[in-house]
Length: 200
Image 1 (spheres, rainbow, N blue to C red):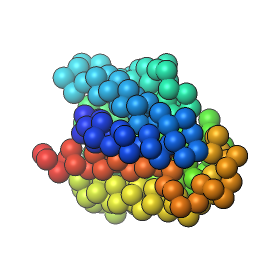
Image 2 (image 1 turned 45 degrees about the vertical axis):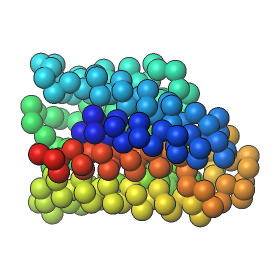
Image 3 (image 1 turned 180 degrees about the vertical axis):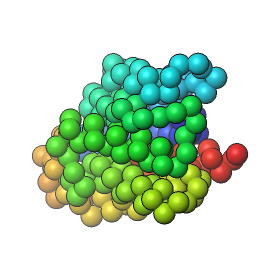
Image 4 (image 1 turned 90 degrees about the vertical axis):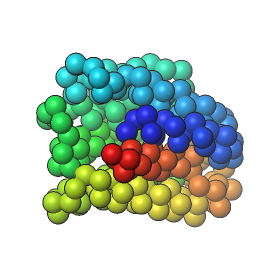
């Protein structure tokens, strides 16, 4: 899942940085490529480490990477995923619980919420869709497709929003008309997650 997500982020690196240049430093694509490469290497399916501990270590590695707020927030989310009770294999319920734990950790660190034109606009609906599918007894492949669709819709919705966090907030209504780079990257990550399981 992380490898497929990293591949999509690499493919869209320039696009993400272009989106970020509207209200930020213009380096979001490069930052996300670096972060996802850390995750791809850190979460090794052939490794013998406990999955919870692996996620926590990978998240802390991303937090320690040079990348400003994006690395810190993504790393917090991934490390938080390790707070859930996970066995050696992930079914739909445990995967949803892991993502929900990651969101709780991120929400405790960031004041951003859906509607603020941030990664939360893609992340929250994706995790809600995943949880709803899991509660309905759907298989994990279906749940991740639902999550990816919700993330994509959430990212697109940021096009009409005014930025309320980060450097972009100082531009006010000038940010309308452009999707948020963080939300766009989250949509790509979930699209990668879904694609990875569709290949199996």
